[in-house]
Length: 378
Image 1 (cartoon, one colour):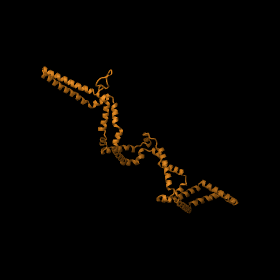
Image 2 (cartoon, one colour):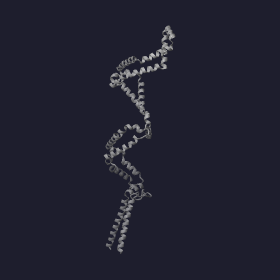
Image 3 (cartoon, helix red, strand yellow):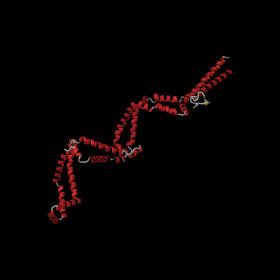
Image 4 (cartoon, helix red, strand yellow):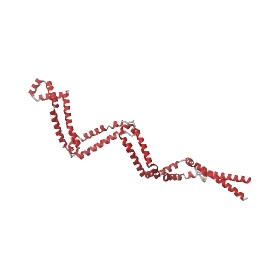
């Protein structure tokens, strides 16, 4: 009975020593956090292993992440494949619906991203472009004739406009001379005519009177303007002049108006047709709706494909420029030791407990063998 009790006591003491020493060894990995000094003498094994080797640990963790975890090859296999390409394409196409169905004005979206109104910049760029293109075109075509440079279909259309211009001129003439202003102009012209005729003019005025003569002349002028013969004569004159104009060199055509006046007119015409300010007040969905099919069905898949190819080619260079190793090292190096302890124990707590239990088991076995040896040596 004494022998059995001794063996049990030896086993318990061995297990206690084994478990306790392993537990102390694990604690000494982290504790104490700082070196302990007695005067100028540093107590051995202070600070703990990890606090003392934290710089090296941070460096090794950084190397492990770069060399074994976030490698270019692993990222390519994980993300740069057909499955993720389709998933990203589908997600972007769904997200694009928010843009193409938005009822918020374009300006609101620009303000959301703190982008100022692009109207002044676009208009200035457009003005500069028109001015530069005008100078280029003028220099290129100034020695050529209008007939040589204008497309044939344009020439045909302009030829057809001669009759329209004739109708317009005669119509405006009839409107003018039918008005009170036109009638007054006739009266003044008649008075001026008779003034140059001396006594004969005065006698005719006395006999007929200015008002009655004006009333007689006005309908005749209007009748003359409406006559088909007048139309034919004016159209013939305009066609003849137009044929002459077609043989002008552009240098002569440009001289009809000043360059600056023509440029300003072109710039104003373009701004009026585009009307950027009105465009900014339109709902974004309406403004970009013509682009919807092209963007969703073609542009987004193409962009994803190009981005995938670019990442595949430049991923290693990108990871190198990101300096992940240094980022990890700096982050780990900035951790409090207590936080680092919690991080490691959170991952390996069960394993550390098993090491403690294993120490107790081995200690118990060693205690048993010690008891047996003592019995044999009696």
